[in-house]
Length: 140
Image 1 (cartoon, helix red, strand yellow):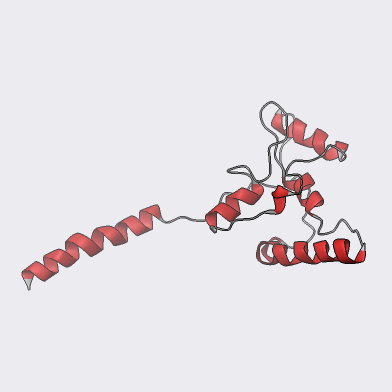
Image 2 (image 1 turned 135 degrees about the vertical axis):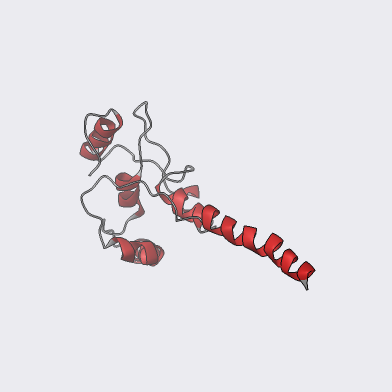
């Protein structure tokens, strides 16, 4: 009986303690550039793929283009810039898309076809990103 208790203490207790210490609290998600997303954060975390798929279907099958849930707008707002001021791929390790998808062990293929960096057409957003990277402005 003592051997069984000792075995329990040696195997279970350290594992339980390690689980608390090593428990992942969640992904670190870089903040977007805008003041507000197109929908509430909790909604977007849960349903962004449905919205992106719906947007794709509306655009590809019906020719209807809107910006509200477009992948391009997501990239424009959520892509970060490096210390040199150049945009970083939104799907690079530690960046907006990759941080959650890596945490959830989800593989995405959006950026095999779509741009993963802002294209520069949003000059105000790009200028703000550069200002944040240079430390001249803070992220809201």
